[in-house]
Image 1: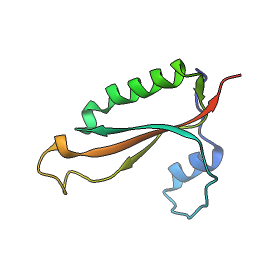
Image 2: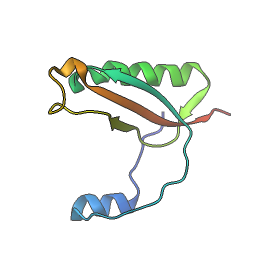
Image 3: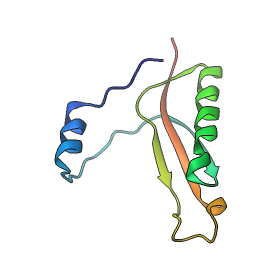
Image 4: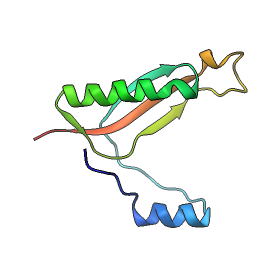
Amino acid sequence: MRPLVPPEKILEMARSGDIEVKTTEPLQVAYLVHRGSYQSMQESFLRLMRWISENGYEMDGPPVNVYHNDPMMVRSEEELITEVQIPVRKKG
């Protein structure tokens, strides 16, 4: 797997703390829905990476997490719902 290097624009914003609006192009992603604490997400992430590799895909950008709720909305961390998305493309 090749290392991902953030684009210069992202690095600039990380340094400055600026806020902007952008339009993104559609992406093909492999994803799963993780239920449970944020600390336990590593296992789900590794499961998704394994699925990508075993099904003829490769990573094509940085992962994205979509938090469908947050700790302030649930009674227990086990109720947290996080969608883990990884942009992919077919190998070859």
